[in-house]
Every structure is written in C-alpha cells, then in structure tokens.
Image (cartoon, rainbow, N blue to C red):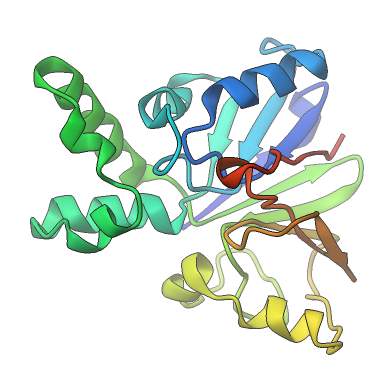
Length: 214
C-alpha cells in the first residue's frame, strides 16, 4: 500500500499531475525542464490512462526506471473491470480506448493494465524540501504515519478535504512536510497549508503541472 523512496538517490525529483494519456504533452514539458532520465525522477499522482490520446504510452512509462506513479481511480476502474468482467463504469469514464485496440496491441495493453495492480496507493519520499507524501485524491487522516491503515476508496476518490479547504476550513495534515494530490481538475494549482492539489486538467485543454521537490 505504501512505498518509501529516498529522493537523495536522484539529482532532481518532480511530481506530475494526472496524465490521462497526454504522453506528448508530458514529453514536451520534460524536455523544457531538461529532465535527465539517468539522474532525475518523476512521480505521477495517478490516472495515467483514459480520455487522452496515448493511454498505452503512458502505461509504458511504468517500464522506465525514472518513473513512478501511485494508483489513481482510473487505474482502479480498469482493474475492477478486468477482474469482474464488467466494463460499464470504466467505459463511461474514458476506458473505451482498450476496445479500439486489436490483436497484439490489445494484449500488450492488457498486460500493462494488469501491471498497474502493483502500483502503490501512497508514495513517501524524502527530498531537500522535506518529507513528501503523494496520493491520488486524499490522505484520509489528519495525521500521516507510514504504513497506517487508511480507507483505500477515499485515497482514490475523496474530494471532501479539498471542498473544506476551499470553503475556508483550512487545516493541513500532520506527520509530513508536503502532501501532493491530483484527481480534481482545477484551473490552477491550489496550495493550502502543506497540501498541494496539482491536477490542472491537461486532458480537458489545461496544462500538466510539474512541481519540483528537489
């Protein structure tokens, strides 16, 4: 459920918002930042797939040593669809790209999707800016402790904390220096206390947000 990384093993560490198949946009942004795959690390807040043009290419990033991701609700919808042979919910949320693939392409995509079963729900990484916790939608507790059992559904789906913050009930999460979330597309990155919401709707005509942790 939790994955712990030491950011000091890399030169620069970046976190990126929900990709949703926007592979070419990501590559352009990495080139602009002079990202070096031999020295740098990129961590995604989840939702590699669906809605955008290149879900397969985004899944293939999981084969790269310089790329990590937490599980998003779209990966979970895909895994649930495959496990239960019930594709309705996933198809309604952008999963129709899989049916458009044929033969070997579809087989490769299915293998990549099943690999996403190994994605952690939460990544903790110590960087020069302190201890960072990365999850898709929320860390459903007021105090972070590594390996503490927390509600998995809320990690992937919950928007209540963000709503509370935007309504003026400003409270951070204890136990780490920074928390990074995606899931809810916003017009601009939203920072409050030690919480950072970075999904800026790349697949809906917005931009990818990349935040440098070190």
